[in-house]
Length: 230
Image (cartoon, rainbow, N blue to C red; front, side, top):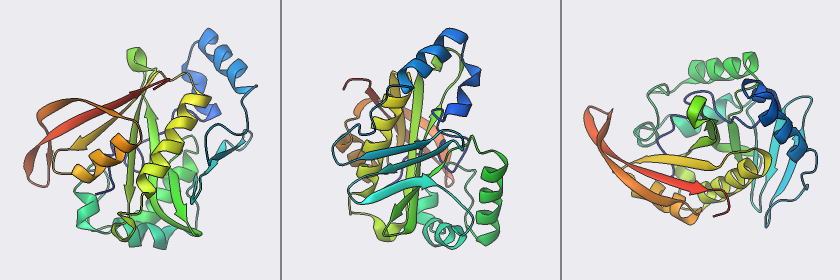
């Protein structure tokens, strides 16, 4: 199943790599990022093209088949169509309700409009959003670690979209920030998401026993990670 635990995208603020969200960093860290970003190439990986509009803090990433872009008004029906499934809900954070209706989609988009630094990216195929992906940047001692999360509507599973989106966003995250480590957590009952992460270059680092409570039961959780340069 193409979803990670999603304590990040579409479940809480994500993507610590938009330019405006770096205010939490110290002066030296911020200067290092600015120096790095001023010389970024417009192409950073095979089959992918990155467009960064700094003033509007808009990130668009194009892959061979997908566009990763900001959610916007007009995406409500796509959100409901792809999120209103128990099979998706079982693998995401509890801040995503089930059932998921139009009012939930409208509230989500209104929250993004009020907090544009929360860059949840829509996974778009053939002009229609089919899922969501993002990286939550941690703070404090963990500020060089990000957490990847994603989901896809069930009718789009099995087509490699989650792997393609994860690869592109992780490459973008390492290229445009000072992140050293990107993690992802997956419920043990979700082997499909484990395969997505492994294909995207993540290594399984451990198993957390009965780490989460979801759908009325305690669930083991796998921890995956990928380091800069891997």
